[in-house]
Length: 213
Image (cartoon, rainbow, N blue to C red; front, top):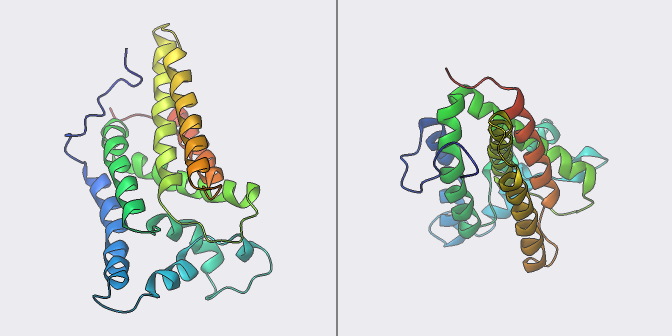
């Protein structure tokens, strides 16, 4: 029996809210990747974007912000910036895989709520658990929120039909293992705190939000 009651087929046509999120991530990456290649601007544009839009824990303390709303806006803006084209590509493939089934099940509005709330939850957990002086960027907090929503739906449905919960536990263990492997491969530079916060928020919302009729 599959983990979730719907298909995660890679050839599924992306839904409109998924395409919207993709475009919101694509536009800054196109600008910054072009600058990285020297097609326009200069090679410092990505660093400038991280300075203004990345999530900096120090801005919640005594660091001086680059503009007045930065300590608040960074809870949102960090999720639409990436560390490079490969980081962007992997995250967008994950968005297409996880996003469309959820948007079809919950509808566009509730799906976007799960995504954005998971993004905020990921940033909040990073702020609470991490002491990194480096900026945190990327959509993975929101994407782990989508993964959490899938797991929560699977848990709820399997409980309703009195099916075994091992597939759900296995999915959680696989996600933990994935984070351990990535943390090791990246020499400890993985923002696992963001993944954890996003996952918990996405799972919680999947339990309480009404699905589309």
